[in-house]
Length: 75
Image (cartoon, rainbow, N blue to C red):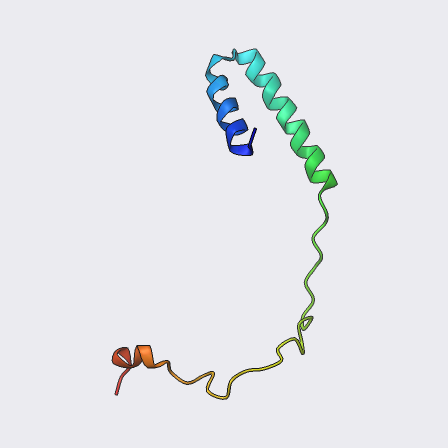
């Protein structure tokens, strides 16, 4: 079963659950989400200049206006 099919199946069953069962389901989902957050890889803080030297080539006319926009540019 694909993820989309699973989500659709769960959504279709929700209206048939009672209030107590919905609360238990919510609590269980909260527990599962907190476990996933705890096991998620921490994001590394970006460092200024970490891509320095990565650009190998830039055309000489890089900053020149493109021909397709000539009709929109002031003369």
